[in-house]
Figure 1 (cartoon, rainbow over the protein chains, first blue to last red):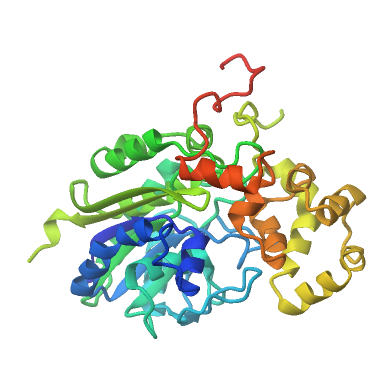
Figure 2: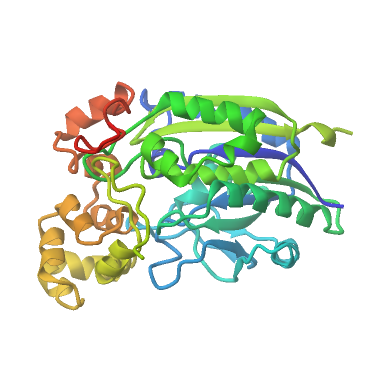
Length: 283
Length: 131
């Protein structure tokens, strides 16, 4: 049986990808950001996940205003890094896991979450920057990835509650897959940031750290926080944090926090990062 | 009955809702076209001519030509779509964001290094009843 062993959350700031791609990761500005992932890179080397179910948002790359799916699961064989206006990131092609992805799609839709299935799409920094942060710069990504795109660009995004409950359905789906696979779930985006208008640059470290606390120990009540609270307290783009609740819903109620990191700033954004492990998965 | 907009009293912020999306459809789809290198080249060669191929209104076109991101947002632009314009210009997200705040690029950079814009005083519009 496949099982979800751990969850990872991380911000996916595009400038982090640019810093890596352009050889600036050792600069004074970026050093503390990458230092926060040193533990994580060692940890994941030892964990060797077979598949990462990667929750992220597309930033008007694969999905324009022509088509705006609320939840889209990648069921394809592979995905190329998107050209977001400055050329494609020089990172490996992302290999999918169509068999597991289709299994999850069927199971989750029959649990009343109406997903959009996508065979062909490019994946942008929202998906590739977390891979870079966790795996560095390999010639090929060391595992399969199922991209799961959440609409947080066009209002209204799905509620935190909906995301959390979707996570629970995902867990059931993975656990009913008849192959021995080590699956991780990642929730990306956030933390507080606002990229637009006169309020751009907003950071709310207190909100962010409470969010981290509650995501670990009090996710059930955290999932009831309404959209407006994210926008007001964490900035218009801070709403990305609802994606972390999908990750959390897919884990057990009690988890071990193996690693926690918070840093301001990376470009316009507060960087947050957690590694959470299911308590029941150790053999 | 009109849809509720609980975010209307957040200062300095435009939420990309149904009304903005309807208004900005062509502006945003023009931005999407800049994801192709050949379109970026055409746009750079003659911005006005490239824009005139899109059914955008003059306000939207002027916003693009003057790189006034607040103006583009007010005309229905969404920041992730507009990002294709400043990426085409080779400008970073941070530098582009700073242009919307009335601060210089350096002042904005320094504010971020100091921990970002404070939430205190930035939750509600001044004239709202909740502040």
